[in-house]
Image (cartoon, rainbow, N blue to C red; front, top):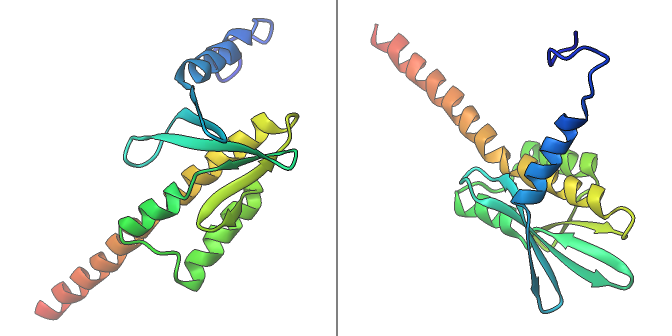
Length: 155
């Protein structure tokens, strides 16, 4: 019996099919002048669907978040402005093969690598978006330490 409660001889194909079906049903594609907008079923921290923009340039397909993720972080008061944040940010992008170009998260794909590159960009968008939650957790720890210090002083 494996972790899903399915014997080794049972067909696990329906698991993959269910995921692919969910993904296919959740994708929306719209064409715009010069490219396509892909709305994914993956949600950011606002429960908005992540969108990817694709344009063909010089034989390659450029996939981009159109600057959404960093603009959203900045609008929420978070900048990638400390050495530690820059290190985490760059490490995240490097690990996924995502590049930063004019505040846009980007990957370059070919027809053959398109699926994997879309997935890498989605992962990068989600990971960078999660830096906001990490910042809030650090603020909670800091504020908790200040509260404890104030409590210790009052006793």
